[in-house]
Image (tube, rainbow, N blue to C red):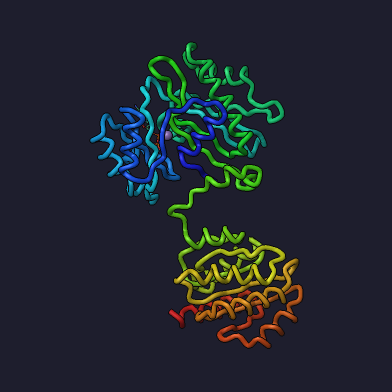
Length: 382
Ligand code: GDP
Ligand code: MN
């Protein structure tokens, strides 16, 4: 789960990193009030879950109220690579002498955390890594030891950091590592990490990703999820604990198990159709979960037909059938359904469906037959 810059900075501050004072706002009026309160100059910063905001016009210095008004007006609503700006972070501006780069991430091949540090900050680090890899220092950390101050100093010295700021930069690396470990982050990046004219080191930007699977340990962090601009169906599905990804086709898909759902998408595509979503109802889905999942699929107005592809293992086909029957009772769908039930309790499931005699439900025996049927029905219905 990615955090907005200002949310990342708040986690930084919690672990002792120095950040500039600022306010998160959503209107021009509040932006100007925040700027007046902080004192000029301020930086008006777009809060979106994408990098390169500066280049896209999403980061502007304001020297007075008129400029703060102008920048807040221009940046709110700005489209940065498909991300619309709804929130601004108004921050007391810093004087910059030099811009460095620092990050901690998970090195999956080494199975260890990785510290990356470079004096070439403020620019895209991928470019540094490609053109001048010797200027990007990479160091794995022993997770049982953690990042010690000595190790951090050694990284900073390897990069040939000026001696008078070595300590300050090493302290930031150590604190950043603490953020990464204690908040269960998968990425903690600072670009730029600046040196001010009075030779202090400071985090001017923050890019933090948190491990979704560890959010249960951090209920306060789970609340930071940024949902503005998020797909409505995806948000509704997550609220119900359903794994759902919106796609741009017209055939709603429900399966159990990520692998089966992926192959269902492939077979539908092979049959000439385009899936409207990926939905994994998961193992052991009961009738209620199936009903809820059906509701999510049908909430997409593009859906012209729905395919249920269930291979019963832990999931029992009779439960799926009950869920579908319940969904028909509640939602009264107008689009055709194709249902393939195979595996545990499939005979009972098919019998239930037959007895219920749902309108517009076609049973299918094989996955390919199911895909061909649903593609044909979707075409008829569009
Ligand atoms: P990004 O473009 O999305 O990475 O956004 P950043 O937060 O990194 O800001 C982009 C650039 O704006 C930075 O590299 C700085 O050069 C500049 N910038 C950001 N904050 C300040 C500030 O407080 N003072 C000054 N002088 N420049 C800033
Ligand atoms: Mn940046």
